[in-house]
Image (cartoon, rainbow, N blue to C red):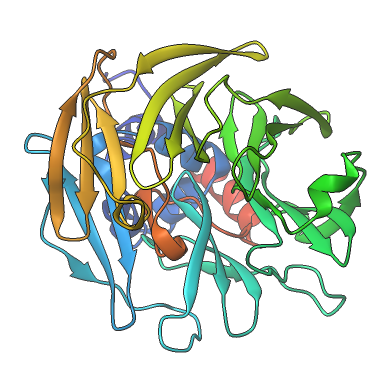
Length: 367
């Protein structure tokens, strides 16, 4: 250890501390500030932060925005802390559309503007532009947040406007939007189809596209984030005698789908994607009867062989399932009204710091 350079020792230690401690460490000296602001530090710190102790649940209601830890031992929420939005809003009219590595892509409902926001560092970035990019319309648009092979955080925005579909990509690196080509079936442009938020897994963004009536068409649209090509794969072979909902989850870089079907009471099967085909993992666990209205209002987590059904007040009940152990919690339904998210506390920034290259040069010259 004595033979290692000082900056290497500092780097290895601080990439293992919580995100908020990294923020405090930046004030120690200029050298540490420079080191802790480099892309390499942020990337490695993020990869080491993806553990349950760094997971938080953010919940928004009409009066407050609160953050709760999830207690891994008891599988329940810990004491909450109130969060103040660092950007202008009206009566907490903030919808959370996508999340990745501590970043949230949110929409301000009164202006339709998109933002990237890190609730741990409070940093945020407006994505809207004067030429009408970065504006989101609920029930028509879809959003996916991802990282490409060059470690550039990007937002995919699928827009449906009067029978016309446009697909746009925002790059954090160049701070701009651009249009990309998308070939799809014309019927998917109809508002009768519901597009989910994108789920990033293994270099691909996945969207469920479901027709809004019983017996309708259900497919998965895949977007390769490096080639920027789209393709369509089928839904798992589940009964379509009732309403169908497929929720995609990235578990250890393997894509899973919790596919529910029913009318007044829902049943669920768990599937995993292998190639372009779905393999059933879990078939219809014994679930107490749940009304559709309550089913849409709760959030579920899976971890360590258990499936926890949660409300804002805490754990509702537990279902034992035969799955491999997980080190983290994975949400397996969305929050009603996009008013919450499970995120990891990281120092990933919603924008590239303009003085990055200067700080990097300072860091390397000092150490």
